[in-house]
Each structure stands twice: as C-alpha cells, then as structure tokens.
Image (cartoon, rainbow, N blue to C red; front, side, top):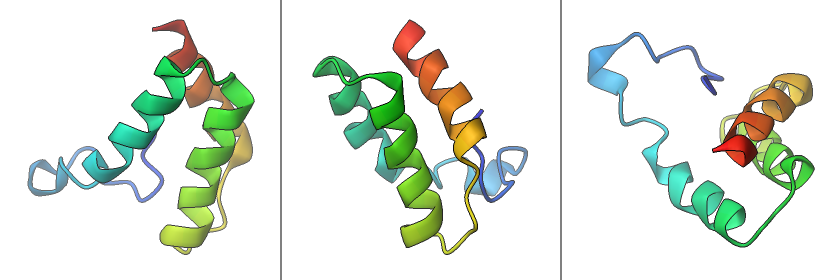
Length: 68
C-alpha cells in the first residue's frame, strides 16, 4: 500500500521498495509505534525520493504494519 512513486502495478519495478523493508521490519520488531514508522516512511519519501511526501498516508500504512 505504500507506493509513493506509483509503481506497484509495474511488474519490472516490483522490487523498488525492497531496500526499505529491513528497516521497517526492524522498527516493528523493536516495538516502534505507528508514528515512528510513519515518520521513517515519510522521511524516505522526502529525503531519498525527493517527493513532497504524504504523512497521513504514511500513518495509515504504519498502522497497518503495527497490526500485522
């Protein structure tokens, strides 16, 4: 659901976000709250991808991650 550059429907780019998964998973395993995970996703959108970012969407995704 976290698809800031809109490539989830593109088969050739399915692994585009894999590099961020280990850190997100580590945050979850360490008991990080949804806001911490959302802030990480938001920072990736802004700092690494050069996008404007969508903190509300990041919060929705982070809440789903916490519920796993």
